[in-house]
Length: 443
Image (cartoon, rainbow, N blue to C red; front, side):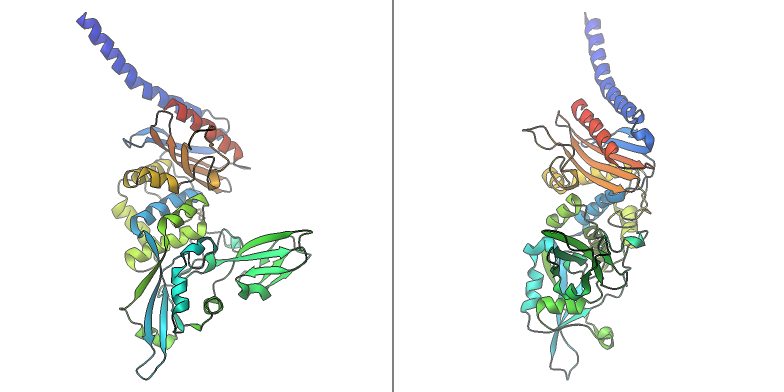
């Protein structure tokens, strides 16, 4: 009798041990045998959130172009280094010399992307401070000279609204809004650029000169109005701010740069960080990503050197990653970025350990509800969202990485990375949805 009990107990233990293995093998087979995934190259990694144990890996140690999955790294860096409310500007009263009775207000940018940004109008206290101060403004340039684009960005995307230029003191999100009416009238914001826009019936799309803020629009719509968004070159910052603030604004004269004080600066704070990170992840906002990474470098080193920041994070903070990523920008616009699925799930696991579940899930798009996942991975009627993840798409590239809540309540961390396919990514999205729903039921 005792022998039978022991054998039964052993059989139960063996069955429990084999069950996870069988589930993992089935998932692995589904990925490897997928007719859709066979049309390109697919990597996949699945990790248990509570134990950080790797459950499934299909080419999980292979490097892929992450596209906007790079923003997961930017999110992790921002949560690591930036305060709960973003610094917006630094200001300091200043006199040009002992005999100069005019007082100026020095203004120094810290990379904040939300200053005068149309999506963050509720958090413009720094702007109100500048407007209420009686002194004329002198803008201070930073010692380091930022390249307008990140390394490996496509130069011919300069007129596209997804690739605004980077800056130490950005305004309006570096985006121009044009509303073109059927009557031929134009409403332009910022208004400074109204005379730089004209319609041309020979054009089929909005165009901009590469080095000049001059836009040509197609013929007006036949009825109603059409809205365009386009990046502007931030080369006329004093005039833009003077228009908005209604006061004198100029660059600090070069002759006074060497006399710039190092103390007495006051930091003005603006937008709550979660408000910015939510838009970063939900809307996959490239401009926010780039500026946040610059701000992280400035917070850590006092300079906008993102390559130094990235090396420090990989060498000293995020130690133990399965494969060291090649990480060059904040947004994922660069094809120089290379990351493995295993590395992404480990970064996501690190976030899981450090952040409250509610906060983390709120920052990521929810399937069937938010941003880039609004039309995918929807819960059944009456159920809550079960997938919280970040997409990433370039030509021939599609990725999805994040968190999956199984029927059992177990949280799984996953990363799908696809490359070397042609055409639409929709078949890959449908196939991922099928497999992720299978995971939800199995685990």
